[in-house]
Image: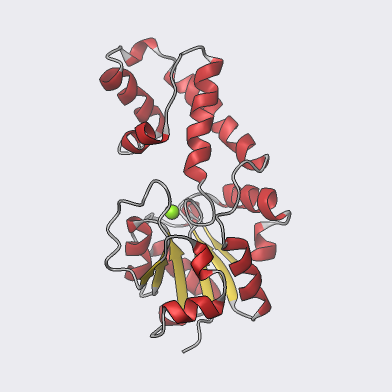
Length: 232
Ligand SMILES: [Mg+2]
């Protein structure tokens, strides 16, 4: 059966955006002379606390044993959010290896392209403009974003929104994801799912995935995907 559309997750799948969040935190910590630096290993642990402000408070209290009330957390977080936008717009976060090739091959083959993401549409556009030089809608026919649905991944809502936009059934599509939350979201929408873990999700359990590749370089064309997923 032909795959009629590819539906991409954004954060961790199209690009390692979590790294831009980490760099943005570190840049602003330096601006405030905090002498804080979050390494990748530390950040993996800190990511268990969701929300940037909560993460900073947790770090102050439990890693440094200082009272978070003495840290201008809200102000730092506001600066960090702006810095994150700058880093994405400056193109410091490239597409993951293999992604550009896969997008080009799918477009040339008449396979339709969509996005189903937890982030908001302006962030998707910023990333695509910075990495491909065009608007997200020039690449993806449908951009289903987190701010358009009630429940975020692992709920199926954002994938169902993408399917509605495409006018296709889940079985006609393939979801590309990097995380267990994303996999569960795609599966709940009855969409087969190919996983390539990102740096911060490579310890997730992907046994329910239809295929797992270390890098999207192993899935850089529809032909490569067909050989990975003979039954899809
Ligand atoms: Mg992701």
